[in-house]
Image 1 (tube, helix red, strand yellow):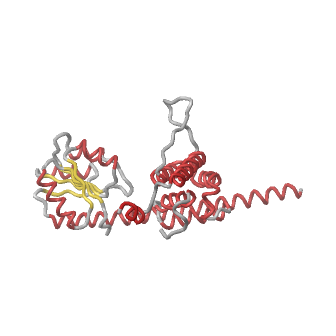
Image 2 (cartoon, chains in turn brown, cyan; image 1 turned 60 degrees about the horizontal axis):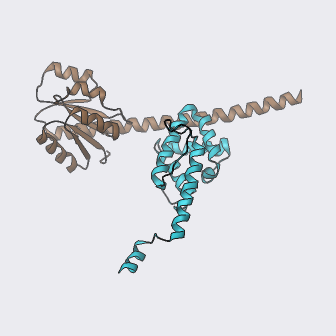
Image 3 (cartoon, chains in turn purple, orange; image 1 turned 90 degrees about the vertical axis):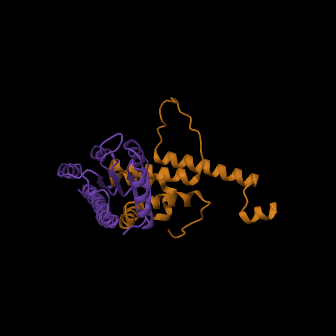
Length: 162
Length: 136
């Protein structure tokens, strides 16, 4: 697991921001915070984060509306929703807006840490897969380019021979 | 990254920038890139800085328009590593200069070497140890 992973906490509640920051930094993660949607968008545009933990109710935007506006990074940033107002509708809405996990406040920190570990492992696997694909693509293109050159050369020499 | 050349040389800094950019695509991909340069362009890694034109056209053959993104990443790294700022004269200052990767690298090299010569002439930059002995 990548302990240098960067995590963004988006919550207007100062206590939640401090508590989660302390718990995550204790685990070795690099933590940044945003107190509203606007700040979160600015930060994701300027920086790379592996995970965003987003509160459902923010002063300027609803958490689920914010999710699609957060910049997609590579590997794609995982998104965890927090809510103090649990309902089936909220959970369905979060899943439909591509949240990777959904937690009810007060958050059980150990459960949250376990989920972050799981999401980061998945992210790592995806990254390795993507990198393997890139390497495979370059190798294939190299073969194609070399083959084309050989074919062109033999075509030219055949032409000269005739 | 293991030390491959002299950090004060522009070629070394450029090679490091290229190496770091390619590594962002993964170690296997980086190896595949270098294999391509060697096999298809007869351009071994150490010779890339002196044939940046060949590197650029080779990248374009390999990745098409996607090569631009990779070149931009190399330019960004180069800009942050050499720490030299220069002005570029353009006919229309409202428009950003249209520079090719090869041109950009060539200008960066020129200004980097000029700045280095200037520093050497003035001899104002000293090591921490030297500074301590001077100002003790």
